[in-house]
Amino acid sequence: CIMFASIAISLLYVFYIYFHLLLIEFYKDYIAITTTSSTKQLMKDILKTRKTVQCYVGYNLAMIVLGLIVGFVIAFAYNPETIALKSKIAENGTVMAITFGVLFLTILVFFGIFWLFYRLLYGILLRRLYTNYKELKKIDL
Image (cartoon, rainbow, N blue to C red; front, side, top):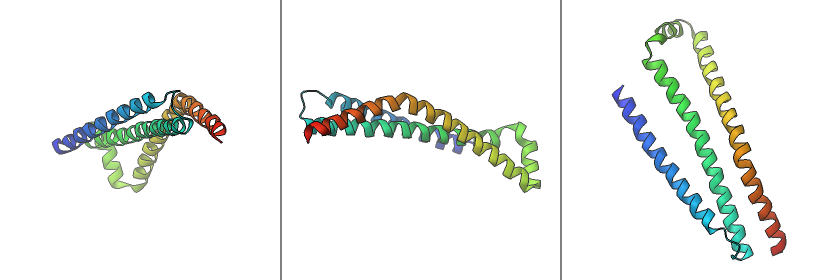
């Protein structure tokens, strides 16, 4: 139990560091977008910011899936109420398939809900950035 907790805490630190690096990168990309830049540089800055936002969304979705998997493992391994389920799984493989199927569907539903949320929230920003990029590309040609 202690080893699993120390691994989980170590992963948490790694993910927080990565999260802060993404925020710093986004801030630098955001500051770099200025109207005084050349058209070509402005297009590069917009695309770089767009990629950073996509990385951020992907990072958050991966963290949701990983967090759910770790949560299910902890609940299954250390919750005393799952002893009956563990014995049924040991006796019958069908129960194991059903259990993992339900867990997979739960992860898929949560992933879908959060993906739709991010698609709505950041999709607007990314669409605007891409529209600006296309307009600048027309001007540059």
